[in-house]
Length: 253
Image 1 (cartoon, rainbow, N blue to C red):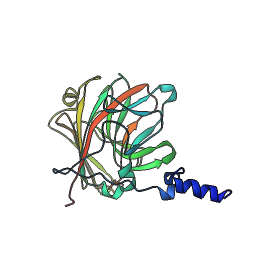
Image 2 (tube, helix red, strand yellow):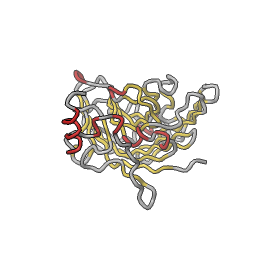
Image 3 (cartoon, rainbow, N blue to C red):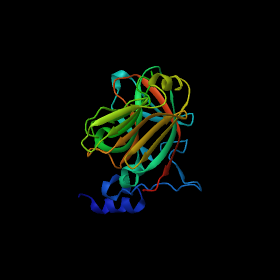
Image 4 (cartoon, helix red, strand yellow):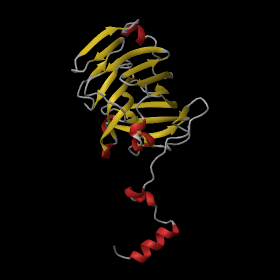
């Protein structure tokens, strides 16, 4: 390296950051839990603890906002750094968050037990608790990017789905139909409360206190642990907000 003395002097003075060097970048630690075991994942002020494509994610009115135009849209995610650096610790948990559509169009979701399959685009694949502005897909579990075996819609709204050890699917109805559950999901401009519980082979997705779908995944293609992220889906002019994001780790059986 040229000018090595100058380089070392700048480093000593703190004018060159260790963060510039991937091998020296400190590992993102999981924040401390409160007395009830809940860990806050968003400070309501900035994107500390998260990373995504510049220009697509911001904080507006105390909420994480994702915004794009169709012409410049991307299939990308806002990744929780402590889950990226400690994926094995994000296996069994209960996560709560609120979401609100600002625009009448768009598609998104929460990635859990995910895998970063395109680091340059900050893209995460795997289990997705799906949402869309028109509530056509809101409440389903989807296999984003085919990371969970290319299984597409893994569990429909209003259904309980079991994937067996041979990767075969069986579905039975919940106590409410898809249309009845859809009627409980608030429209564009209003906040919805979402809860996703991942415990062993079982995933439960609820919105506004109503279970929208349940999935038991005994397939060899099942996702056991991994990254948490919020998705921005390509092909839309859309704005969406998330807030009140917290997680509680669950003990393994």
